[in-house]
Length: 171
Image 1 (spheres, rainbow, N blue to C red):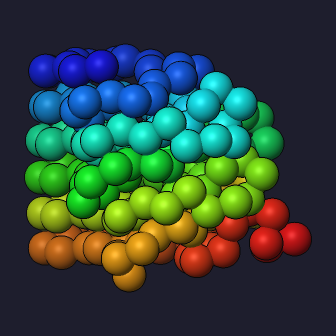
Image 2 (cartoon, rainbow, N blue to C red; image 1 turned 90 degrees about the horizontal axis):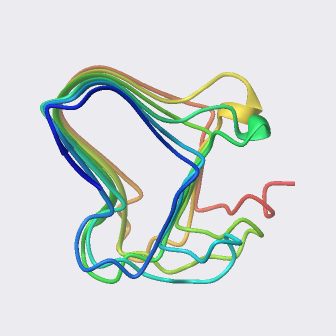
C-alpha cells in the first residue's frame, strides 16, 4: 500500500506478507490510522511470512495513529522483515501515536527474528505506548539491539511498553 498525500485514511484489518518492498508507505499524509493489520506474519498472526522492507513507513506526515486498543483488535502485528529495515520507520513527521502493537513477535508470544524495531527521526509530538496496559507495545525478537531508535526529536513520550518481552512472556 503506497500513498502520497493521503488525508483522512483508515488502513485496517489487512494481511500483508512476503512483500518485495515496504508493506505500508505513507508520504505527506494527514490523519492516517493504521490498525488491526498483520504484516510480515501469516493471517493467523503466528508464523513468519517476511517482508523485505519496513512494515510501516511514514514521512512528512502528521496525526498518524499506528495501532490502538489491543483489546478491541486495533493493535497491529508487525514482524519478520528480512533485511535491515525497521518495522516502523517515521521521519519528518508530527503528532504520531504508536500503541497496542506486537512488534517482532507473533500473537502467541514467540519471537520472529526481526532486524530492527521502531525508529523516529526528525519528529515531534510522538507517543509510544500508553498508561493502560491495552495500549502497551510489545517489542521483542530484535536481533540488532535496536528495538527503539529516536533522533532529532522533541516531545516524545515512551510509556509502559515492554522491550525484549513477548506478549505471552509478560503474563
